Image 1 (cartoon, rainbow, N blue to C red):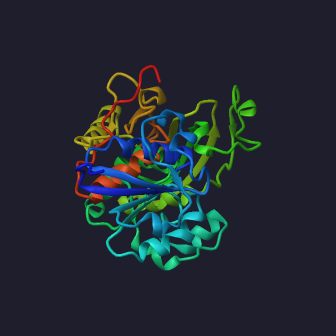
Image 2: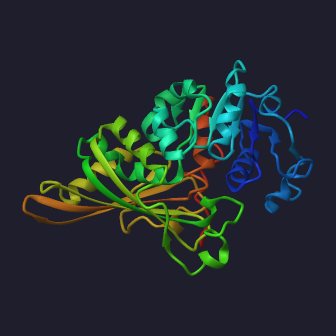
Length: 354
């Protein structure tokens, strides 16, 4: 059936939470038609088998086909595959002329194969492709994304921390030791429960995991260095929280005494002026409920009293890990790659209450 839409898209790996968010937003996209969803799960079943909200919304079914088959006659393929799995599938897609790729895994975010193999504890099957991928943080790489064919969409923690610290990096203020705590919802652990993410041990509980060893650390350091950070040492502690969606990142650092609250707020407002999906709240600090279900992120800060020529600054960033931290950002990247309005299918503010 002709839809009148300008572009055709396929999703590979659409049965997880990130895939579900991709599918739902592609189905309402004004310029892109979702024509195919490939998955090793629910083969032959309707998309509503994985996402009940899609009941009677679409006639598409999950197909047990190769990535190359999924990419037949489409303009863009969006990958919702796990880390290490995507890397094994990308070469056959990258070899197809004219097909653009947005990968949501961590397999192509790092430029150094040694860093990938250290932090992901996996031998990269196609390191020669690492240099060909553009890192998909629009607030940093928008111009490059407009001409990119291969895009590595950022991780959820990485996006939250990068947006929180990006204005400081660009101003030459991000250097040395920075401590960050990131609190995250359960959907970031994926659709399959494990001993550490199952609801009975997550609800009513807070616990750290992978302290100082999370795989997003080198991604954050590499990206902020590109933006102007110098000799950055990131000490990152993730925390599992009893909520389904959302990330709240809190960073602690010292800046020269001259950087007052007012001056820092002005820096952040100028940095994000005109950005469609990053806002600096004026009457409150960032919070998960304000961004849950949307592609918006919030950043803010509190500058402490000056002491011995320095000022302690606490910075905050909040986003939805499945949207701006995942599928929504992937679609934002896709929109830029296709020359579309980057807000297409992403402009909704999210529900209230969340």
